[in-house]
Image 1 (cartoon, helix red, strand yellow):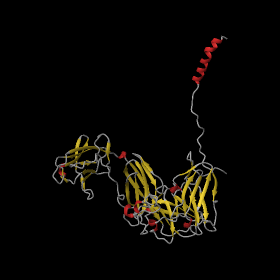
Image 2: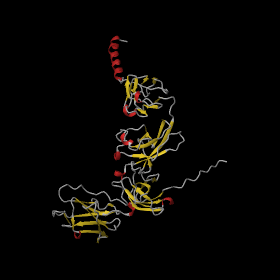
Image 3: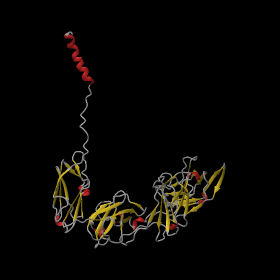
Image 4: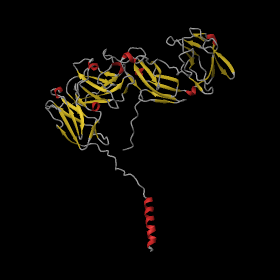
Amino acid sequence: MNKNFLHYFIPIFILIGAGCANITAPTGGKKDTTPPKRLSISPADSLKNTRIKRLELTFNEYINVTDAAKEVQISPLLSIQPTVTGLGKKVVVKIADTLLEENTTYRISFGSSIRDLHENNPYPAYTYVFSTGSYFDSLQLSGSVINAGTGLTDSGGVTIMLYNATENDSAVVRHKPKYITKSNASGAFTFKGLPKKDFRIYAVKDINENLIYDGSSEMIGFIDHTVLPGDTTQTPIALKLFTEIDTATKGADSIGIKANARIGTKPPPDGFTYIVNADTTNQTKRTFDINNSLSVNFSKLPIVNKDKISLSYDSNGVIIVVHPTYISDTTKKKQIQLSTEWKENTLYTLRMAKGFAKDSSGTDAMPSKYTFRTKEDEDYGKISVHLPAKYNSTQFVLQVTSEKDTIYQKPITDTIINLNRLKPAKYSFRVIEDKNGNGRWDAGSLFRKIQPENVFPYSDVLTLKAGWENVVDFEPKPAPPKTSNKR
């Protein structure tokens, strides 16, 4: 081949090959998901007759200690918590050994505080144990936390506290407890490694995590007697969590069906204005709840002339005048309510003529006209609640709640309660043991040693749709036993 030919074409082939190659950054390999491995611990775990001053854990890689104040816990608690630091590949724990009690088992739980430096992989939860005596405490206490207002187990994160039996209830508001643990997502809790001695037990929704009950800003649960740890076969403890009486009953659920939210814009602070709870934006759409009264809410205390207010509806082109009942509410002096037997799917008109209302200075409210359409029966659902005979007593109250409101709350007088014209929503059901006969649930009081009233919840949440009729069997019959074809 001609050498000159090769001289020209070899560089071209090299350029073409270079152009076809993709230049990519190195992948760096797979992400490290392996947690740190502990190589040694000094002093050794599970020693007796010892008072630990310094604990040192050595790992196979560089580590961080994160959120030690929250994650690392010694039990029983000390007045001065251990200091925990990460030094290269080591974790060092320093303990004020002069605070350690005689013949006591101590457990240091590290939670998820120990993590590798680069990928933040946590070292599996680990608890170091030592005893200042010749034996290890090995007894347990277990139980669950219940939201007293709903009767359902709490969703977790509640702090369970143990105090010496010799202390009274004021200890929970004055200083930290002897032992603590947390309830899990199912509301269950367990103390391990306890001595055989009596304790007082409390559950606290410890919002600021100071291990002290801060009064009505937090929830609390207690039992009226001391508890004694035992083996795993003991009866579990049930702690009913509540907010104390002084705040729990403010704005308590009223009996009956609440009114709709007001429609319109919030009135300005100046001037004499009002809002009507009727949606007038679309007269073909059924919007007004026929369970409710028609309310007019004023920005100032009104002087009302009822003769200049009229309510009518359209009946096949004929205007029928309605004579509503006016409802007065001493707690809502800036409001007037008009009540009538609303007709379904009907166009109503509220007319308020000039001079229908004045404020104290004689300023007239602006006249107006509101036209709106009522809902019909098919816009609602129905629920029939079947109750067992044991609840058929005025000592018990049936409470039905939607996601936002209490829609029914009355003493039980029959085993079947029919609820009609309910808005499509999700509904919950519970029976309240109304011991004081005031028609509602009452919380407890720690220092007066009053437990919250018992609540028995229905196990499911019912999704009600428009036009549906549902039956709630509050205590369903057990399913029949399964049959087998085997011989």
